[in-house]
Image: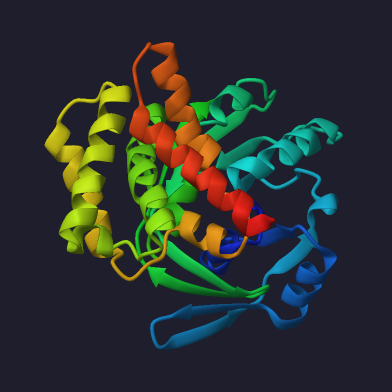
Length: 298
């Protein structure tokens, strides 16, 4: 099985580093410079006190033809537009695509893709991109994946092959999978980005924890969830297990990059509007993050 990976940020580099032990991998980068660097030096995977260099083929995204058996798309939500356009320009449509973005804003766009097999995933690993070809695996977790449409056989085969070293759990319900990740992202990401703290501080600091619970309760209400304590415990566990990690939204703000807030909190604002529900906390954090983006970028 040949695997393509679109996006050479922290998650793309992490996936390429591990999956290349099982399948031929081609990673597609935004720039020629990054592709050249990966081809010249390999991917450097840091994990605790260990370090390994892995040889992986790299090409700029302009060279992607969709010929791989499975392509994992790891770019951020707001970068998907150009990927969708690229898919439409291919001479022949790719057979299987796995999307691993935060948030749920891309679901309405996936409906329009004339692709045979579409899969959706969520990533629980912590990873930090140190440079164009070096990634630090600083939080071990798993990837959850489910079928959005099409046949599950290739996803199941992929899962069986890689799970020994890079766990991929097959889930039956893609919507439940995304909702579970959305709850976590909607609470931890904006709070850490605004407070500029690591994940663990949200439960260590009693006052931050009160804000966390208030925001979570509103998210729970908008999504019409069941079992309030179960989902709150999930958030607490993730804060504990990734206590020293900086959320992706915090890292984006610090680097002056756009965030995925539209796909996360923006999606929740739309859901609240559809149900004629008030969402003052979600709206406030949405605008605070947008304000941070504006300040950091300009």
